[in-house]
Length: 450
Image 1 (cartoon, rainbow, N blue to C red):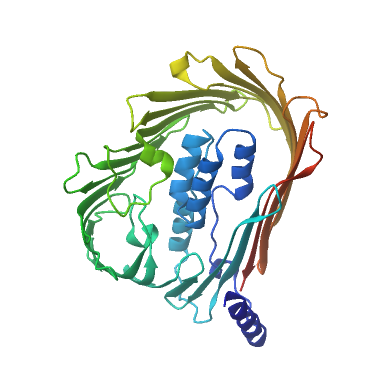
Image 2: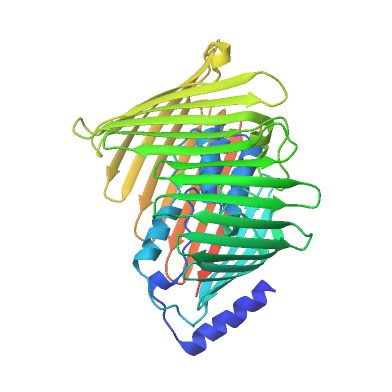
């Protein structure tokens, strides 16, 4: 069906011979891409299950939650660009176009055997104040001057929920009244909710939602300030509410970020939480960054991750300390990771690297040593990255055991972002002592903008 629609749109585009400005084309810029997630997976920073959780959030376009998972699982920095995009849209308020415009996206993932692991097509069309989304979500939306109406598969973003929700089929209406916003939702399974939020200014907002399902009732509260968001969801009859915390502060030389999920022995119904969050009653991370621009732009980062299993009283903690300094032409770095604090950090990883940047070209080299009661061969990685305004390419060569005769991994990534066409191709090949070069993974994404 989507391919037939694609042919119709291309024909319509050709007949009208209309050229849209770049600002009229809906952009969907994910803070992390599939190639980065695969790289963390290949490096052993995250498990295949954790990678799938991040992929799921990226497909849902819940980039805030995808960033949260990446920062906790991989302990890598991630910044959601949604607020930047929103500010950009606010700045350029203009009359909406009656000419349909949008994009078609095709995504495919292949495993090491060359089998198609995941595939989906997506169509997004905007015209006037309407938006039609087909593919991973079947949804027709209308937005104008704060009023919203949604028909179809309604998800977390349409509900303006800080806590991820299951997708529900129904109708949702949100109506602004001065500094308040009133909302109502009705699902085909007779799920029902009422929503009220108070927004005294652009930075602060308080929201309360009452949910009524066929066999459970819940209340959700969330507050947003300049420091971040705190939300809670309580299902009547359960022992403890679920709480989500995201707080951060950015100063001139010091910044910090706190992320946490806290819940009891059971999870409220209709929440779409990742497996790692469900299995841990405390799921938290803390990041502190300091930088001194006057001292060769030195940057220091401390990251901590704490998990407390719901099925027992056991607690797991991981710490990572990183530092980098120097000019762009020659910038060394060093990091040390305590894999498990409860084991007295018997397993630690030390990674030293060096980076040099020349205009659009960046070269990197790093060596990782793992210490677990005995010394293992170091892991060596070399990479080259070229980036322009519309294209980027990256080549990374990894030696997991320092000796290419033992194991070798080669990863390539090519990205293109132009007005009519965007694509991202990422693929990796791997060899071991017993197996010749063979594909390790491949990810293909093609976007046609019209």
